[in-house]
Image (cartoon, rainbow over all chains, first blue to last red; front, side, top):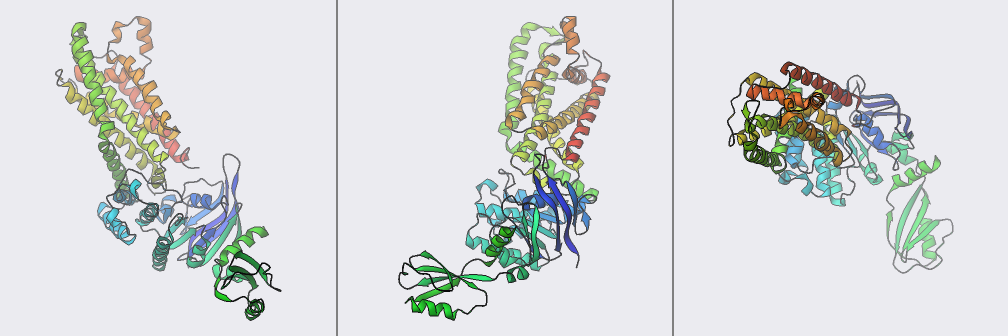
Length: 304
Length: 257
C-alpha cells in the first residue's frame, strides 16, 4: 500500500525563534483514518500548515502520495483537501459561490464544479442554504461548508483540523458518519481533535505530538492495549456514606449518589460489588467513564 | 495543472473579482461617478468658463482626460488593494494559497479584476463627461494603450500594498496620501507650461504627469511631455511592479508563515 503522507525530519522555527516542530517523522498509509493529537501549541496546526503550504518549513521533507512539496507542489496540493480550525471563507459570498469557486481554483470546469457542489452540499445538508451568505450560517453549518469546500475537487487526502469544535453532539455524530463513509470509499483522512472520543471512535492509527515531537505513533488498538486501568462510574440508590473508601479500590465520590472506581484491567468486578454490598450500598447503574483514550493521552504526556 | 486548468482558475478569480465590485456598486461605482460629476460642474462649467482656454481647448475639454485617468488609477488600485487585503483579513486568501494554481494565475486574476473596475469607472466618467463637453479622440491606439497599461500598473501596485497592509488604514494611506495628491499635481487641472521653471521641473519628477499627459495626447492630441517617454516609464514601472509582486508570491512573504 502506498503512503498518502510521508514526513521526515520536519522542523519549523518561527521568526520569533519558537521551535514549533523539532524534526518529526510521520507516515500515513493510503486509506487510513489517522488521528493527530496533542495539547494546544503542540505543533499539530503547524504540521498541517506545512503540508498545505500555508506555513514554510525550516527543514525536512513532506511527500503527499509521492509528490514532494518542494519539487512537485502543485501535484501535492491537488491531492489535498483541508478543513482548517478557523473559519476562512468570505462572509459576503454565498455558500454556493464559495464551493464552486474553490472548484475553479483547482481547474474544474463550471459544469463539474456545479455537479460536485450540489452533491456535497446535499450530503452535508446545506443544499437549502446554497444561496445564503456564509455569515448567516450557524457554527455547525460553517464547519460543514468548509468540509464541502475541501471535498469539491475530490482530494485523496482530507485533513481536518478540529472539524467538530463547537458542534453539538447530534451534528457531530452525523459528521462522523459522513467522514467514515468517505473514508470507506477510499479517501485518506487525517484528523486533529480535542474530543478524544472522536479519535477513538473514528481513527485506526494515531500519533500524539507534544512540544514539537512525536510522543507516540501507533495503531489505535495497540495504544488502547497499553491502558492498564479502567474507571467506572456507579450510581447508588441512596446517598453514599461520608467515608466511602473501599479496601483495595481507588475510589472517588463525585456526587452525593455517584462514585468513581478505578480498577486494574482484567480484575474481577465481583469483589468490588461484594465490598459495596458489605457497606450497604445498592448500585442502580454502572458505566465506563469516557474515555479511555483520554486517560492514555494524559499518561503519555505526563510521562514526558 | 494543465494550461486549461490554469485558465479556469484565472477566470474564476476574475469572475469573482468583477462580481465583488458589481455587488458593492454603491461603494465602488457610484462614488467616483458623483465625485467626477461635481468636478465637471465646478471646475469645468462654473470656474472653467471664467478661466478660458488652456492649450487651445476649453478648460472643460482640458480637464476631462485627466479626471478620467484619475478615476482609472484610483479605482484599479483600490480594487486590488481592498479585495486582496480583505481576503487576507478574513483569511480566505488561504483558499487560493492551498490550491495548485500558479502564482502568475493568482496575480493576473486579481490584476484583471482591478483593470476591469478601472476601465468600467473610466467609461462611466467618460459618459458623464459627455453631458458637459464633446470628446473627439485623436489617437485611439495611444488612448487605449495608455489606459490599459496604467490600470495594469496600478493594479499591480495595489497588490503590493495589500500584501504589506496590516489593517484597513494601510489600505487607504496610499490612495489618499500619495495617488490623489500626485494626480492633482500631475497636470490634471493645469498645463505645466503655466508654472515657473523650477516647479515645472519638479513636476517632471511626478510620474502621474506623464500618464495624464499621454492620455490627454490620445484624446486631445496635445501633451506637456514626450508621449514616448510616458509609455516607456509606464512600461518600466509595470515590469518592476510585476517582478516585485511575483517575488512576494514566490517567497510567501507576509502570506505564508
